[in-house]
Length: 340
Image 1 (cartoon, rainbow, N blue to C red):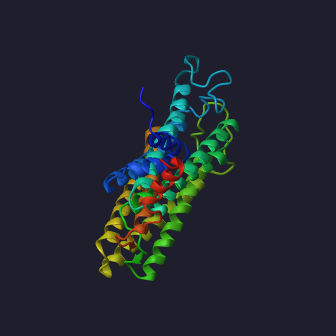
Image 2 (cartoon, rainbow, N blue to C red):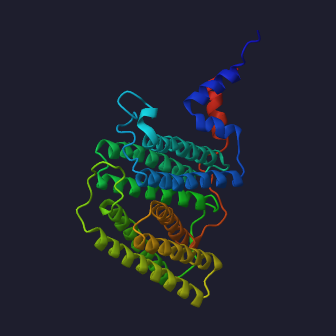
Image 3 (cartoon, rainbow, N blue to C red):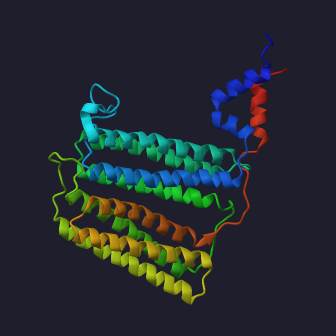
């Protein structure tokens, strides 16, 4: 049998010690691949919102009554647990798919040449949010779907969507200093829009916590608030966001702003209108589960659209600073292998 070359042994050691650097030294993804990897993480973060909503709307929140196992005696759902057990366990399994998508985004970002430290950090930020939110999801089950923990679970997912959106946008830009495309008054208006949207999302979680869809058929604690009054406040905030969006579009049109901010604002306005229609229809039809699920999807899309407006207000030149020279890994490998 042929003797294994020292290089192969060194590569094995290097792969164990720093697998990301090992892959990066041997693979250079195209910019299109990096963009697709970042987009896959964003898409999965939206899908997990929708499937999480399906768990609640089908009353399957305690389909797996414990965590991290599904039951005290089984890691997975059993036939005795029925439909609700499979729904809840299926949503848990999708977390692994989300982790895979985020991992793929991290690997692609780390392997891009030249190395972009900021892009890789955005990938790792998503990873830690996913891990933290998975633990929070377990706590939600262990405390019997306490509405405050459910709200925190959704807010954490919104944070994940925000980071994923920024990473996706950054894959389409360089690493030069950002240059504003609009004046400071317009930027301030957009930040008012962001603040109103954040408040809209937060109040939306309160609507959920006080509303009739508790997430399980058993007696589940609800927020001690008048659901209809909170819903009306939510609607008022939605109209504020719509008004700010329309004002922003009008101002951008008046000052002959670049097409990027103008188009992103138009997209946001259209999404808001669709979301508003769904919201009013579901309210006047006693909250059918399908429409509530579509409204949750719309919430994620509104948040992404708002962030895209913010990111469209500046441009970054296609200049990438190499934080880590391509030769650094070769030098590391050589030092591990030793003299030949």
